[in-house]
Image (cartoon, rainbow, N blue to C red; front, side, top):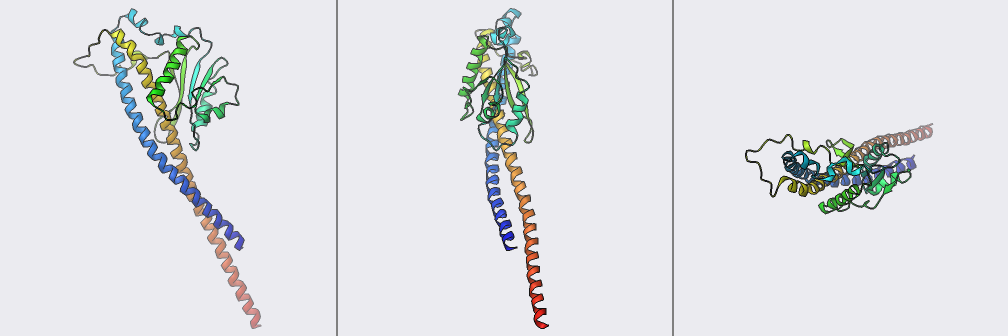
Amino acid sequence: MAAGLAKIKRRISSIDSTRKITNAMELVSSVKLMRKRKAMDNTVEYTASLGVIIHDCLNGMKEEERKSASPLLLDETGAKGQGNLYIAVTSSLGLCGGYNINLIKFLEPLVQKDDQVMIIGTKGLSKLSEDKINLDIENISLLDEFSYVKARRIRAVMTQTYLKGNFKAIYLVYTKFKNSLTFVPTAEKILPIQGIEQIGANHKEEAYPPDFVPDRKTVFELLVPKYLDSVLFERFTEAMVCEEGSRRNAMENATDNADDLHKSLNIIYNKARQAEITSQITEIMTGRLVEEE
């Protein structure tokens, strides 16, 4: 009986140690989540403002100018491509619940024979390496110390690839932030640029609209790469927010499970200890009765 009590006590001690680790990781993830969420919100506002300017530029152009404004808007640019390029944003760190596996399950049905997947994050690579999928791992470490410069670099790679006609379209597959508990895998077409006429369409007309110097088309051509940079930076930041949110939730659940298990084992330990004490008392009383006889 004593050996059984010692075993339960060691297990309780082990669970307590694990709980301290998961609780500390939960607190760290909460701080990181707040920082990344703030960065995401700021980026969303910047991208929206840039979208309004682009919308104003395009809205004031003639039909001929719109068609020649940028090849990145045209489906014909990638018409010679044999398949699509999917840029999948996963994580390089674990302990984030179902974040990576949910994204991979969403991605796999999308990828066809002639398509290629540019994988970002080592966890996504480990889950896709066994599948017969054409992988590009050149930018796998993109999110390590992520910055606007890296977003600009991946945009340059994307646009060059699309302008060469290597792919029909380029999609970004990432996890969209809905709320602190819900993260939704999403595929968004990045190239050719879609729905640019609707960007900023709900924006209220200004009393004194801006002047475009030297003209709208020139400004539009300059802003399109910057707009793509900001969109990519926003989406990557949003994916990192979802990753950190998933990790925080996973650590919170692990801590709660440790608490529940600690309580259950405490009950078992107390019952076993009580049974041992009762047994000892019974033995003492039995021995006393034998002596009296």
